[in-house]
Length: 491
Ligand code: NAP
Image (cartoon, rainbow, N blue to C red; front, side, top):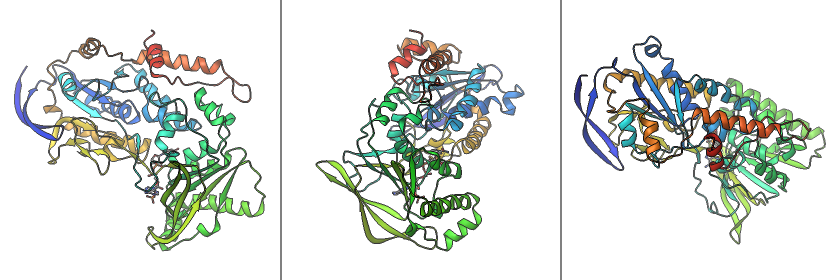
């Protein structure tokens, strides 16, 4: 096999190390070995798009792809980020399942980059490494009182109700009045789950501990706050409309929030989604004027208010101070200096997700993404780091779901294939080398066959329990990490 040496730079910690990479030139001699870190939609679609690329389909390039996840089960955000009462979106799992069921992409679960694996470990076994680790934490909100008991990040609550293995089994649902900050779809998910009656969630796959927690919740009022106006909501029409489908929950709107500037008029005229959502809101406003609201729970939609301070007593949330805003004419806002206090006992901030830094990989701490140019990882000097790529939310930030994830993955894969001449670097490319390596380190990894075992087990748990109508449930999720690993490994 021909080899050549090229000068490269790699970032380790905060330093950039210059080194020489040995390039094994002969493409045809062996498959290009690719590791994908993260088995959520971004990771699986990226792997799938690589296998379906023209180069691979025509046999010009052979690839061997391994996909890793730190959780014992695959599907990332779809399993641990999508609300359980969104079966349509959860249905994406079916498509992702089909990709991994083909058998040409291997899955290694319960293996964490930075803990079980270093970059050097991966470099040893793979020619290219694609990071698709997503953005799973809450964006910070720096206001007084944010650290009080009763102030939560929406992403943490989502992880709890989705049965994330690394979250506590109980969630403090003691508040009657709750505030949710943000006007995106996560705010809608969180406020819908908080306000729904737990029995109505039994048709979903919620774990037993989540059902018990929600069942005991004394909540009566959930207040959702947007800092801009109704015409600047980041909700999507279907998700907004769905709020009205919750049984025994009234939607409450406030006429004074329906203020529009020139930019709002333009948005309502030109943006089809805004137009549809305004129609929905106006319909609810009319309805509320003519029909008495008698539900035992209420979901209030407030606009033009920014969080100013979370009010506390004895370390606990007792209220939320919001500043009223007015529109600035361009779709932005100006604070009015007028404050309104809401007597809430819990505040959830749903103001966006944020990606975490990965060891030895360049990170933009303002945007919470891996430093990259169109999916090629770059170091702090903007130099491309050979063999490293990014895809999904950790590449572009936490916006959009499946459609943008696919086009984003295509861009990354296009660049990887353009670079392929220089990628054949892993000195130990045998197919079984990596599983042997994990075994040698005592890492209890799970596999695709293991996912089938866990999947069957969760379906059997569902079949053995009943929803509120007495019907068998489709699935009940296993939450405990060790239990997930043991079931997957057949131990
Ligand atoms: P998002 O759509 O970006 O919404 C974030 C919201 O937080 C915006 O209303 C934003 O207001 C507000 N915000 C940001 N900083 C704030 C601050 N300091 N104070 C008050 N409000 C603040 O983010 P997301 O809801 O986390 O959703 C992430 C992505 O996942 C989106 O693409 C979303 O559609 C998608 N998703 C989809 C579904 C679904 O069911 N289809 C479910 C969940 C998530 P401004 O607009 O004024 O910045």
